Image (cartoon, rainbow, N blue to C red; front, top):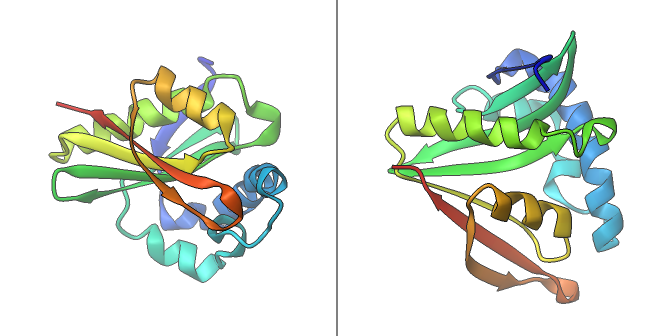
Length: 156
C-alpha cells in the first residue's frame, strides 16, 4: 500500500467523498436491507459544512480518493465516523492506514481516546476495528433487530 497517500480531508473533497461514501455504503444498505441511512441520504451541502472543521483523512491512489473518514474532537475523545473505502479497494489496508492517520491527528489535537461505531451485522467492520485495538463499549438496539456497536481505543 505504499502507493497510497493519506492527507487531511478538506471541503474541496466533498463531491468525490460523497460519491465514494455512497458507493461504499451501498454494501451496508444491502446487509441491513435499507437505504435509509445517513451516509446514503447526506447532501453535498451537509458534507461540505461538516468538512470545514474536521480531523478526517482521505486516502489517495494516483488522483483518485479511494478512502475517507471523518473525525472530530469532543473534549479528549476523538469521534471517528463515516469510514468509506472504495469497493474495489477493500481488503487492501486502506482502512487501517486511515484509522492510524486519524488517531495520530487526534492525539496531536489532545485526544486521549477514540470512539467509532458500526452495525452489529457489519462483521468485516467489527473485525477491522478489533484488529486495530478497539474494544466494544456499548450496544444500542435498533429497529429490525440490529444493534449499533460502539467501540473505543485509548490513544495516550
